[in-house]
Every structure is written in structure tokens, then in C-alpha cells.
Length: 371
Image 1 (cartoon, one colour):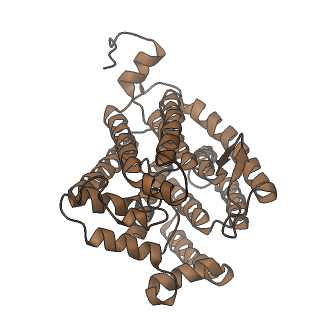
Image 2: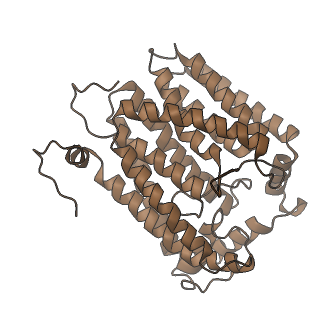
Image 3: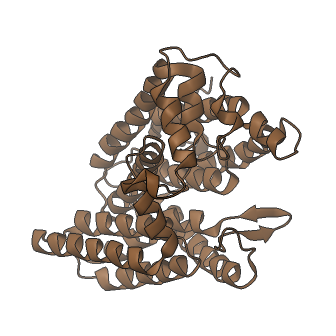
């Protein structure tokens, strides 16, 4: 157990006495649980693809190491360091998204992945936390929404690049995060209503312009209108879950569910570990979200407040979308369950974002310079 004297002034000692230990423990418990659930769900998927049974487990362990380093390393930063890191990350991510459009492999009609040193990276995952922090820095330069235009234009650029892939779900997430930050920055209620109307119109246009979006919404509204296979299997697994499940490794849905280790891992958790485990997992997510919002309320600096709000809302939205799809409450969207699902880019980007959140919400003397 790490232990430092309160009078010690080293970087690690100051970090230890100012970072939120509850959130650190929560993220660690999520990551450990994710490893267990990937171990339970992925061997069947690997065997179906003709890969070694522990293929995805080994890769997940490899992803966990840099993810842990990113979370802990970012949490050591000052708010100024967070802003600089996010600026560089946003610039690099935008360049990578542009390269993805040019040379990225096409998968199911979309180009979202970029080969880097033998690995496939999804740059759009890293755009989310970086854009949140950079927009917060732009908004914080002036009171209210005086400096909102540069942030809105930057967000619009990201949206256009995401829609060009196309990745409509990611674009909607980015748009929602931008709207939340504008609201917290002081958006008047009249403009809030206007933003809601604009969002509804944007959804309608994506329905008309992108056939795959229209297909998913149609299947959500009428499951008999198209392929409802994965969502139907996931919902069936959750509905049939016993209190303590069938036991680790004893489930059947993972043998027929293509994304049982990633987007639909919650269905495997429900079937094999039961409703008690599902409720415990939901409780852990709830604890992190409520604790995170509580820590955000204590932040006095405008930049740190706007950035931390966007980061914790991103985490919460991703949980809601994944569970909503698994429970057939939302149209199908490929989005991982934070720190639980298999996925290298998503895991590392989430760790980086939550590391920045921990850094921004650390306790600081009232006279400490933030900028």
C-alpha cells in the first residue's frame, strides 16, 4: 500500500494526498473486473474465428498496461499540463483521422481504423477527451459564451471528419459533449431549446442521409424489419439471467454472439455471473459517476470545471449507450462498456480521459495558479 508523510513535498507525495482515492479504487476495480469478464467471454469468440482461445485475453492484458500508465501518468499533471497534453493529442488525432480517410482499411463500409506499427488504432476514440479539454480551455478564456465561437467551429470540424468516415454514433457523442459544455458555460435556456431542436433536425437528417443509420433505427422501432440478431440475443440473455447466473464459462450466448467480448459483454455477464453481478457493476458505475460529479462541484477554476464536466459526462454517456443497446432501449451502436469491454483504442482513450479528470479534480490550495 502506497504511503507518504503529509509533510513530504515530492511529486508522488503531493499527488497521493490530493488525488481522489475512491475514484482510483473504482477505476482499478473496473479494470480488474473487465479482465475477468473478457476471460469469460472471449475464448468462444476466438475459437469461432480460428484463433488461440486466449488470443483476446492476452491482447487485453497488453492493452491494460499502457492504459494504467496513461491513467496514473495523466493524473500527475497540473491543469496547465492537461491543457497542453490535450492540445497536442487533438492535433495528432485529427491528422490520424485524415490519414484514416485516405489509407485506412474499409470495414463494413466505413474507414475508422489506422494501421500503426502492426496495430489498428481508432483515432476518433482519442478525439473525444482531447476535444473536451481544448473546448473547455477556449470557453474559459472569457466569461460566459464570449469565446464560444472558436470551440463551436473546432467541434464542427471534428463532426465533419467523423461523418466522413462515416461514424455517426461517435459524431453524436461529440455533439452531445459540446452541447453539455456550452450549457455549463452559461448557455441561456432559450438557446438550449434551440439546441434541442437543432439536435432533433440533425438526427432526422442523418436518418435520411445515412442508410445504415436508418436501418438501425428501423430495426429498433420494428425488430421484424431487419437483422435483429445480436441485440435480440443479448436481450434474451439478460432477460433469462438468474440471480447468480449459470457460472463462469457456462454460458451459451457467447458462442453465437459475434461481439460477445466487446459491445455485448454485458449480456455474457448477465448470463454467466447473474443479476447480482450486473447490479454490482451498475453500482460501481454509479459510484464513479456520482463521486466524479461531487468532485467536479468542488472545482473553483472555470477551465478545470468545464473540462472535468465534459470528461465525466463522456464516461457516463458511454455507459448509458452501451447498456441501452444491450437492453434494446437504444438503437444498435458499436460502443464499448468503459474498462469492461475488450478494445485497445477505447480502453487507452478512456484511461487517458479519466487520468486527466483525476488531475483536474485534485485538491489544490485556493491560491495555487491553475493556468
